[in-house]
Image (cartoon, rainbow, N blue to C red; front, top):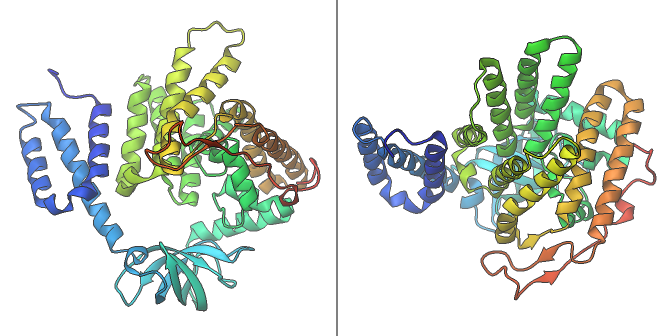
Length: 440
């Protein structure tokens, strides 16, 4: 290597350092020294930029691990009686559960916790909570007292959206909330299991797919409105507002950076590689939250985008007739193959049926998501159409989960191999769904 290393290699080195950093906490001073030495010698040995990026990644990983070690989820022992002053997230739903940020606890800890058995509390409000720590930051609330205060704008808007969804979609509201604002507290376990078994679990979590669909439709609307080249700017602005409303989850943040870089490239008439744009998205996520380097959700998001990009490029030279269908099939295959090792290791499950399920599931989601968002403004007429598409998506999931061998399960980790494979499929419960295709 005679020149400076490619941007993708630098980001890869930084991400690798963020992963291994927590294991090297005792060597923080050495890491800083190595990083400084690497940066000091860049002008003489450009290859050492990789070492500098690795050292910077290790440092950020160490800092993130130290912050994580100071969270209440880590410090509170299971079964301990706890009390804390918290900022509540979304208002508790039917399952009386929500998330909260600890502002003060006697132990001096902070971080995010999950509250169970919560009475009515305002979205984004503050409260004094007394309860019992169960495990990993989950607190069973015994007493709670709301504290007067003005909630942040994000939670006020999320609460208004959730209320509107419940009015328009009734029993299907938990599913719609999961797809639109990422709130899954009230989502039935049968629905979760069905989507996982069909290889469509990514549709229940806010991912780059949702953000991409949102950007596509906003851009199309802006072009129809006659904004021309400014349509990209409108779409990017709308995307970042949406990502902020979601709370900057890693997959959505990565997608926002990806779309921003693509729009800027078109405006400047530049043509960076897909790998460079993906790397920019990754470094944006790691800048916002270095601990995302150890998040399975972030791994899945990046792997899926990489797999889709590689697979679509392989069929890029195919003639126009049937090209769109072939690209969709290639995207489904690429995403499934790229994420399979991660899902096998982390969750002990791979859904081969997802290769077929995504061919129909993704287009249905691409229609349902903008339909739901539009219905929040238009009202019941659009909600009826969006509800019909959601019903079709649920029916498709039921069909896919009924395929024998569609989902392969085994113990997670390196033990996942063909000697311990079992087959698992489960039809979702009709009782958790609405009664007809036209019911929103």
